[in-house]
Length: 122
Image 1 (tube, rainbow, N blue to C red):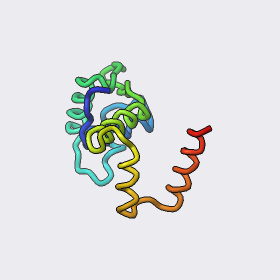
Image 2: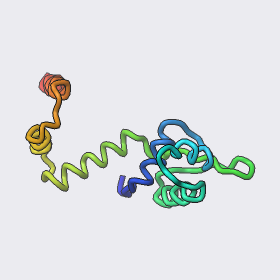
Image 3: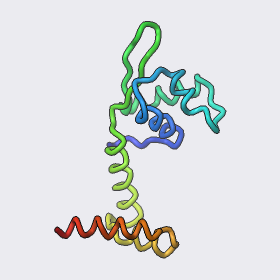
C-alpha cells in the first residue's frame, strides 16, 4: 500500500472495516462518539480515501455505499513495515528492545512473543 492514511481517515476506515458497505451518514453515525464531525466532514474524508483508491463506492439510488478496497490486515502490515524501516532500519529487535526499555511490554505480551518465536523456530 503506497498511500498513507491520516489519523482522521483511519477513524473512517475503522468504521468501514467493522461493517460495510455504509452510506456517508452511516459512517458519520459510527464515528460521532467523541468527535464533532458533520456529515460533510465525513464526506470529505471519504472523498480523500476514494482518491487514494483505498475505498470504493457503489451508487444505490441517490446515495453511495462505501466499502474498503484495502483489508485492515494489509494496512497494518504496510504501516508496521513502514515504522520498522523508518525508525529501526528494517530490524524488529530494536523495536522490541525499545518497548521493553520503556516498560511497555506486559507479561502477557512477553508470553505471546515467546510463542511467536517458538513457532518461527519450528
